[in-house]
Each structure stands twice: as C-alpha cells, then as structure tokens.
Amino acid sequence: MRQRTALEVVTKKGSALARYEVSDRYPDARPRTIGFADIWSESGKRIAVLEDSGPNRDFVLDVVCTLGHRVSEFARTEDLVSALISGARFDSVLASFDGDQNAALTGARILRRAAGVPMPVLLMMHPEQIRQADTFVMDAAIDFVMVPCEECEMVVRVSASIKAAESLVISEPLVFGRYLFDPRGNTVTFDDGRVRLKPREFDLALFLFRNAGVKQSRDAIFDAVWSRNRHDDVGTRTIDVHIANIRRKLRLKPESGERLSSVYGHGYLLSLDDE
Image 1 (cartoon, helix red, strand yellow):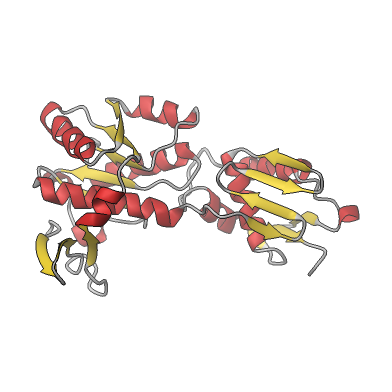
Image 2 (spheres, rainbow, N blue to C red; image 1 turned 90 degrees about the horizontal axis):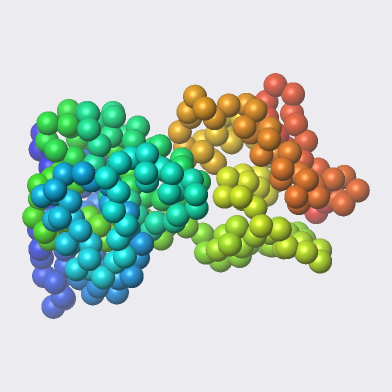
C-alpha cells in the first residue's frame, strides 16, 4: 500500500492544474483538482506554522510566503494554543508534532479545540510516524502531507487546506424568527439589540436554532460544537454553563415565545414560537 499522496501536474483545457490523488487512501473518492489561478487568487490568508525543525520550517515558510500569505511562526504547541485561546484566528494551521500518528491527531484536535471555531489543520508528517495512511485521517478538517516533499506538492496541499477552511466557515447571516445570526462577528441581533457571543456559545446557539424542535443529546452537542471530538476536560458542567449563558443572553423564555429546556437523562430542546 502506498503511504504517500501522489502529486502530478496535468494539462486540461490549456490550463495547468495541480492534482493530488486520494484514491489510494479513499477508494471511493475522486481526485481533487486545484487550478494554479485559484492558488494565486487565494493570497493574503492567515497561516500559522508550528514547527521547530530548522530546514523544514524554512522550507514551509518560503512556500507560504511565496503564495502571499501572512505567516505567524510558533516553535511550541503551548504558545500556539495560548494565542488561539486569546482570540488569534488563522485560516489554516500547518503543524508538526513529535510521536506517532495518534499523537499528531491529538495535537491537531487540541489546536482546533483551542481555536473555538472551525479551523483546518495540515499535519506535516515523517514516514516513520505513519503506520497506516488509509486510516490516518479521522476528521474532515485534518489532513496530512509527508515531509520532506516537493515544493509543488506543498503549494497544492496548503491551498487545499485553505479551501477546506472556506467550506467550514459560514459567512452569510442566518435568520431564525426574530433572531439574526452573523458568523462574521459571532453576533446575534434580535428585537432592538445585538449581542456578541463567545465562539463556543455562538456555535452552540447556532446548532440549537438550526435544529429547533428536535431533542439534542449531550453526545450530539459534544460532536457538533467541540470539534467532533470528546475530551476529558469538556464535561457535562461545561455544556450546562454554555446553555445557561445562551438562555440569558438571548432572552430565551416562554413569555417571548422561545423555550430552551433540559430533557431529563437526554440533553436539551429548543422550541420556537413558529413551530
């Protein structure tokens, strides 16, 4: 079984395209294609690079800077986590971790959890770190590239990661009854006021409004809001606190036509007056 993603440059309709095959890792998947014109039109993104190895760090920084992106360098995981918790936002993170593939996946998920918003992570992996490439990627927003690699492959993989960020982020306002959700600022406008929620609160509120009238288990809430991964430090109390904050900040009360109630032994249910 081939463990490295193959990269080839092909010509189609007179345009050079960079294509990397994924069929060896995902038999039912189609090759993903990214045009060079698209790569250059995506310049100016915010990219975090977590790497303490000199040669590979310099190579990655050269590629990212050549594409016209803004780069923030981090040598330690804790420094990047601290920046994310403090509110730093990146369109993608390129990260290298010590240990095997499981350690790398854990590191990527810690970064996504710290960000509090959907954020793709591209792991830079050495061959000895990966046991089975076809079972490595466990999250749609986490991918990997084998290093060292050719410059053209890194260009395509970085661009693919940025495109993944665009698919994860909702930019247009959404309306649910008297509530208008604006993901661009994590704000909710209703009646005569506007409230800015914390990232997790916004994600949870949006999830509940999108699924109004449907009972949501705690497991479903964990999966939807906490990066689809359960962690020991994200417990029942965490959900309860977020629910209480949302109920208070959005004034969800029966007399206003909305009710965010707990379902014993299950989770929560949001009911709107137009249901």
